[in-house]
Length: 457
Image (cartoon, rainbow, N blue to C red):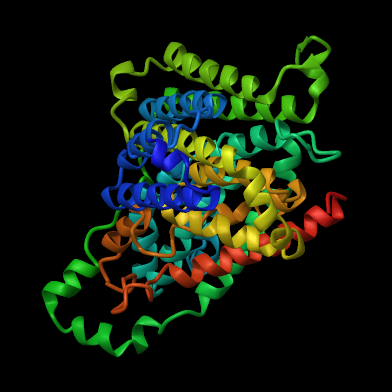
């Protein structure tokens, strides 16, 4: 250990960053919960090898993740999510000609309401069915919808990423003047995200060949088995009479979100302690737990199903990822912040867009917007990145579409039985790369403009 401790700071940092990157890459490769677990290896090397004092995991963020995930999983177990999906399907089937524009907005709004992009799985068979039955190239609305569902995370009042970013900005040593947190962040991220989704839809409207002009697709249709497979049975929630308790479940959940938003917009409605209004982190935790308990009491949901559904599973994976990554990152970067501020501070201050690029790449490494924010935003604040830049470029935390390895993208490929949504010969040229780049770039540009209008920049 003495040998490592006696090395120059630059050499120590180089070795440590290599160890951290290996943990991130290997964890991302293994997938699932591995990303968070690998943080233990990095912490071991830092603490026992370099005598670096362990930092602090993002406890507030982790507890908020837990509360939000439990509430959303209870919503799914109660059937309230099916009501939302049925309403979304009605909108899409009534306007099939505009599917490529509407579908991305529908998946975005579902994510904004539920706080997770994984709700898109249930919508994909419906989007495919509407597209193929109306002669629309399925790749157009499906790839756009998968990308847009993840873009909605940074605009959701109950997402881990938004809560994490709000907490980090409010607790920074140099808070942004005039920025009161939660609602102020959403005032930037919601319109910038919706603008990005619109750009994705417009681009997707014109991408690829129409099915009747696609020689490869038309050749495959000559095979009757393939044709039957492509145009198979319809997937629909229409016509199903959902019980009143499922409608009640949806209204309970939406009411909790509305109350949280109102308390964020009007701090005077919150109780005061030591002369300060209760933090929004606590408010979100309380009302998400309240929503979950109300669902249990008034909808007779089977509590045993809550921990077994997709929302709960994906949320717990995010929780572990944030735990391991944020703890490892805080431990490493805290001790090297002065050095990094000297080396990188000037570059980022003169070229603010470099912050967005670094956040985008880190998001790809960790495959999580919340984990990318937890890992990089504290460092960015430490090296002198202006908080307004962090707010403006918040959509850059979504970069895991760069390679087609994320579950929602892989699932979308499987749901598209026509084969138009695919991974290209060179892997990087897949169906999601251009919609993702267009969506995030346009969201960041619009976010920067709005932040300027709001007086932050």
